[in-house]
Length: 234
Image (cartoon, rainbow, N blue to C red; front, side, top):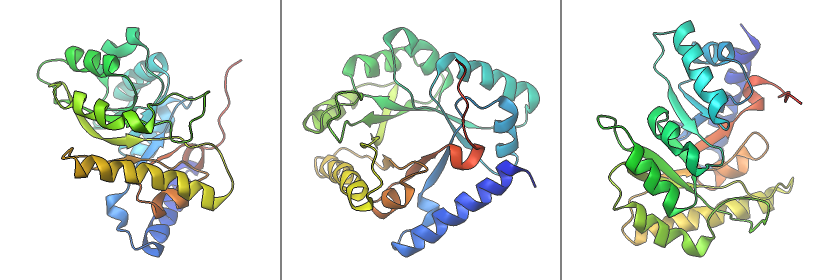
């Protein structure tokens, strides 16, 4: 057994145990392995132990990695999620290569993704990023703007709004973690009440996944707990 496969077993067991604790069905929670800064062989290793969904933050690194994964293991059919900030000049490559985008917070970006989605591919799945903790240093739409932006996306044929994403202010206080995630869940409930059919709450990472599961997360973005400690090039 490799370190990655061992880690995946631990994370999956933890997810299942936590879901049971809060009366959730673990099968309704997608594990998104955040593979940014890790090499293609790490992705292949995880994939060969049952991992399907992978999240990337850096576009050029991601595109190169996708090609290398395809070279190393052409039999794999993976689902790629772009979870980093989006610049206008990057939307075409994102639209052409990814299945999901988690950090849309502007109508302009959503429109470009819709317009640039290649004919023949299904609409790209979108999560609106919400700045749930009102941090000036973070991207994300303000909670009050979620509904207007969601309604705008409904008219765009190349994208499909699936739900909301947030990265709350870091805290070791579980009550604070849960309070932030509860706010995102209430925003999702409001969208549903307004007739916007969303089914995804992309919330929870390695340090706060239990609180996220408790508050209804349907997609956990887990990196270091699967792949190990990251090292960044200087």
